Each structure stands twice: as C-alpha cells, then as structure tokens.
Image 1 (cartoon, chains in turn yellow, red, orange, blue):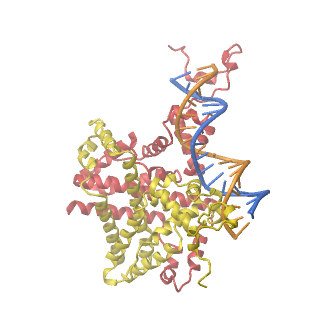
Image 2 (tube, chains in turn blue, purple, cyan, green):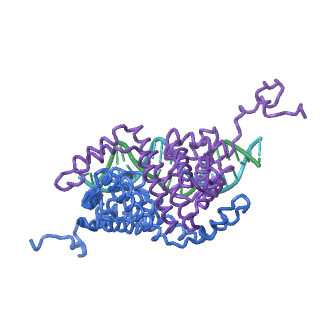
Image 3 (cartoon, helix red, strand yellow):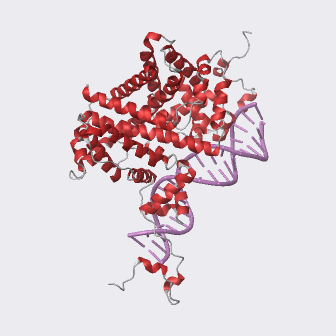
Length: 240
Length: 240
DNA sequence: ACCTGAACACCGTTCAAGT
DNA sequence: ACCTGAACACCGTTCAAGT
C-alpha cells in the first residue's frame, strides 16, 4: 500500500518514456466544489453581475459548457453559492432562556458571511434557498424559536422574515461597498443632487439634508436596530 | 391660426400628390413616455427578466439603438419605470393626529402600484431611486413624519426602511405570482421536498410542516403585520 | 464519463451613415 | 435631430463529436 501512487506524485518529474508527457498539462479536475470556489472568487473580485458561466470557465481553464456536467445551470449554481456560505454560519443548540440573543447571533453570522462576499446576497433574493446546509440551519433555527416558546405559526413567519431582512440589508451593503470602490464620490454626488433641489418645492428634504447626507448611525447600527425591532415584534406575537 | 395644421390632421387622408405618400407608414414618434409604456407592457406580460432594449425596440417598431437618443441606458430606464409608478401613489397632506395611518396608506399604495406590474419592484432593489416623482413623494412623506413629531434622525431612517420593506415584499409577491402562472405546482413540489426530508435529521422542520405548507395568513396579512411592526418600531424611536 | 468546439438565440451599447 | 444597420463584446444553454 505504501508504494501506491498518491496525489503527491504530481510533484515528481515524469520519466521520459511516460505517455503522460504527450498529454496536455494536468489540470485539477472540475468538481462542484471547484466551481463554487471559482464563482465565489469572481463575486468577491468583480461582483455578482460579473458572474457568468463563461467567466467561471476561464477561471477553471475549461469551456463554459463543461460546467453543465456538474451543475444543471446558473440558477442551481446560485443556490449552491448561497448554501455554501450558509454552511459557514453556526447555529447553537437551543437555550430557552436566551432564544432572542441566540437567533440574533445567527442572523449576525449570516450577515457576516454574506457581506464577506460582496453583493452575493442578491443571489438569494429571487429564489427560495433549499440546499442541505440551508435546511439544516433552518431546522436548528426552528429549534431555537420553539424552545423560546413561540407558537408554530409565529416560528414559520419568523424563519421567513428574519433571513429576508438579513439578505436585503447585506445586498444593499454589498452594492454600496462595491459602488464606493469604483466611484468614491457616489454619495457626494447624491447629496449634491438632494441639496440642489429647489427649496420651495422640496422644503422637507431640505430640512432633513444633514441627516440624509451624514446619517449618524453606521450600517451596523441600522442592522442591529432593525434586527432588534423584528425580534421584539416576533416575541410580541407569542403573547398576543 | 385656425387653419394651421394640427396633430388631428393625421386622421385625414393624404391628397394623391402629397410627398408623404412615398414615405413609410407614419409611426408614432418615440418619446420617453412611449418607451416607459412599452417597457411596462413587457414587464406586465413577461416579467422584469424579459425586459431588454431590443424587446422594447420591436415593441415600438424601431431599433434598440434608437432608444439611446431618449434614454441614457438601461439603468436610467429602470429608474424611469420606478419613478413612473411612484407618480401614481397618492401622498396626503399631513394630519398630525393620523401620521401612522397616513404613512401606512402611502406604503399600501406603493405596494399596490408595484404588484400591479408583476416583479417590477426588483428594478429598485439595486439602485437608489432619484426621479422627480420619487423626490416629491419623499418630500411629502417626510412632511407626514415630521408632523407626527418624529425627530429628524428617525425620519431619515423611516423613509429608507419603509420603502425598502415595501419593495422586497412586492418583489417576492410578484416573483411568486409569475412562478405560479408558469408552474402552478411550484409550491406543491416545494412542500413535497420539505416533507421528504428525513424526520430524524430535520425533526423541527417536520414539526412545522403544516405551517410551512399552508401558512394561515395571506400575503396581505403578512405585509400588514410587517408594516405595523415597522411603524410601531419607528414610533417607539421617537419617545426613546 | 467528462470535456471540447461550434452553434443558437439572445444581451447592452457604440457609432458611422443616412434622412 | 432622430433613426438605421452593422458591429463589438458579451450572455446561458445545447449538442454532436472526440477521448
């Protein structure tokens, strides 16, 4: 067994009589994982809009059509990407006393892995994710909420509305981060435009100009506020 | 002045010596309005994904490139579409006693005009709308919230988060409506999938199966609930 | 079984040329 | 000033052909 060929043999030089010499240079085989990896690299570097089958093909040194042996199409690929990052979110065992803080932590974790990949969140806006990681995370989230004493209908509502909130927040965050990268003056121009509106016809926008230009809460604070509001609202449904 | 040619002359037959006889059949001139109209027709009939410059071109019997004389590109067109439907939303003069019901009505109206055009809401997810109608509606919304006694920072937050909530709700609604049109068994298959998950590894999903399969609240009820929660949360920020 | 290469039916946008 | 038609640089997906 010790003398069997292993993957580390690739480091060794080929003897001159080897038929491998005639073959094109070995390329790592295409797998679902390598496709997902390449796709995430593209999203990280160039954004969700730049993600195409052809682009992934060049990244993996193969034709775009070769991908269809491993993935049914782009919709499935997007689902795989979302499911991949969901898999990185930790969902703790339920602690009935701390269900609110626990579910918040899960949402914070989901946000973190989404915005770590630019505007990837946009990939889950148009589809209901159904991957294995998503299903497992969902099951464990339900456990936390049921342990908190919430009725079934409230739990069903919560596992829908909470991730949706995280997705939209993260998508917006990712879009703006990318926009600022390529166009640092985007918000400056936006504020200029607001300020240039005639004060007679837009008196209230003018009154709010300072708050519109420089919101005194960070994106994180806004996220925390919205999250808190949602969890409070969900908790309130339980007693009603 | 009475005898000058008017646009109603187009209804009259051309005399046989008219040079117009040689010209190709008159086509209504391309305008920003006709482009927006055609675009909305396409979105209504085939969804936002089917909206392309070329598609609009065939609808208006012109080349896609002809549109660029009236619109800078697709991003601006999407902004025009959103601004058009925002223009149909009524925003009442502020009544300090009724600010919560007033702002809710505005959001209900916005939802109505969005879902009247399928998944059009998706067009405003990736961009901050800045059209004239949007600016006017925003100014009048701010008036309602300021009249309600909310501090400036809270108002700035509210006019961001409320339309965002409406947009996502409407986008989801439109997507599902369209999906059910082309694939009536979509949710049936989704429920089958949930039910087919092994009960040992997904015990909590199984416990929630009835609520996941048949939520006992309609989309409207869910929208109303979320809207109520947001407005309550915003009102609570004022006193804090 | 897995991949290539060509093909099909599309995109948004630009630009010289016509009227 | 407004529109055409060709072109450029892209899309997702299919499929016969190769190995």
